[in-house]
Length: 71
Image (tube, rainbow, N blue to C red; front, side, top):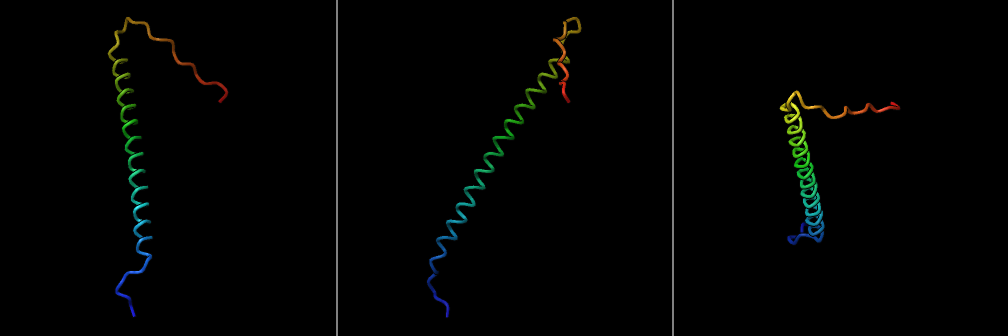
């Protein structure tokens, strides 16, 4: 009834799983790069905030940011 030799579809199954694994690894790599960039941006923003808190009060602040118009 059943053949002892596997049929030809096993190659296609292996190829499908290989492609899926490759796409999963690429997706995880992209997420890792995004998280590194976000972490770097958060670190930079934290440093800017901390340097603003440590500024001397007699220093003149920069020009305030303008409010967006047309909202």
